[in-house]
Amino acid sequence: MSDPTAEEEPGNAINDPATVDPATVDPATTADQSGIDQAGANQSPPPPVAEGLAADESPPPPEAADAPPAPSVGAALVSDPPDPPYDPDAPLVEGDTAGAVVGSEVAEVAEAAPVCPACNEVVGPEAKWCEACGGDLTGGGAPPIATPDAKPLPPCVSCAADGSEITDDGYCSQCGYKQPAERDHTETDLGALAGVSDRGKRHRHNEDSFAMSTGDGFRVLVVCDGVSTTAHSEDASQLAADTASAFLAESVAADVAASDAALEALTVEAILAAQAAVSALPPSPEGEASPSCTIVASVLLLAPGAEEGRLIVGWLGDSRGYWIDTEGAHLLTFDHSWAAEQVREGVMTEEAAMADPRAHSITRWIGADAVEINPETATRTVVAGGKLLLCSDGLWNYRPTEAEMAEAVATHSEFAETPVALARSLTAMANELGGHDNITVLIAQT
Image (cartoon, rainbow, N blue to C red; front, side, top):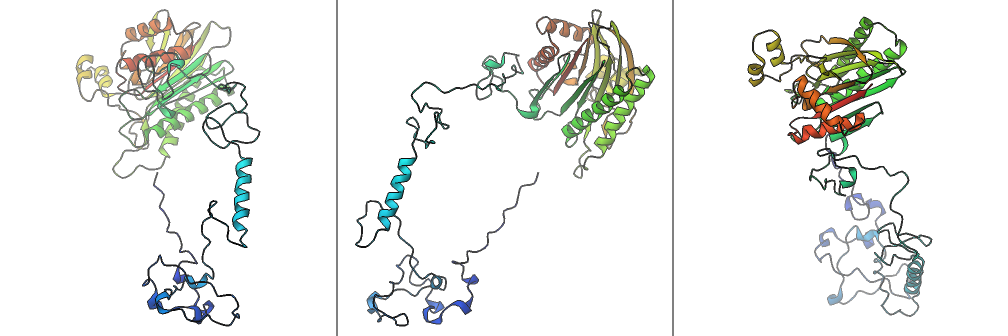
């Protein structure tokens, strides 16, 4: 955003000599310009015309010692000196009733405007509670505090303490963590599926985004991780997530019984639609990379009451998808990153690749300057009772193996019985372990 530029105010028509039309000024009342400002700005204005003089007569010249200063051109347009400020304690001059009228009006206003006895703020004549301090104006007890529409605060994003532990200034009374606002922490709870996205503890902004939707017998979940080295990556991630989710929801709703191959093709189309949308964002400033992000998108099809269903996942980048059941966590994606590709091609061991500074550099992404736009997909048959987990690397970096992720989900599921509770708990775990990156967790329970 650019800061607004202040505009110069036009001159006042009374006080600005440049605005005076010479044709409208009487030469007899206009002083020589050389007299302007010489007598001082604080001297008294000339006395009014004496009583008994005709309109076309001038008063006799005053004594030289008492001669008033020459008025300015601007002053020539003001025929009378300004009224002095009203002083309620000043004595009335004979024949002057203005002060009495003003004083009477002030007294009436004061009498008609009651004030709160607690804070002395003006209140309405029919008010029962003071809007400034909440004080009782009737003597009948304390004002109501809660409203029927009041919503409880969400749990602490760091330690998962109940929302009642959050102080008025936004700190958790249990762990002391400052609660984020706006985009720094977002949650969506749709019952059987839920998502949580958090800024973490090291980044200044949350560049992750997610989107979800449900339909008759299907659910759509999308996670996008903004590439922090590119401009406006949070815009790219949100646009990509929204675009892919909307495309999949509409396409799957039109044909829930589509084949696995058709659903994989739809998932690829959804990712390509997200790529087109992000590429159309305004260009980045010169020298900056175009807005970019990763994406992992999934469609879970499981009819109500069915024991078996289908899961389709597509992705670009290193955001991950897992299917978690009684046998453990099954990684559905493989990272499009430098380290993962070195290991997959047999060039380096996983330990050596992950120790390299290039380990987390992604090799595929969404953005106007993307090099390889070739989404990959995977399909899996799933059974009721399992969980779908989509996440950004802000979570899986702390539990990189399937066994570690399975253990984390199992441990947190013992006390987090709903998808939103589990997503919150896993997010809190990542923050407790350092919160080095943005964290996004989506859970769908079957």
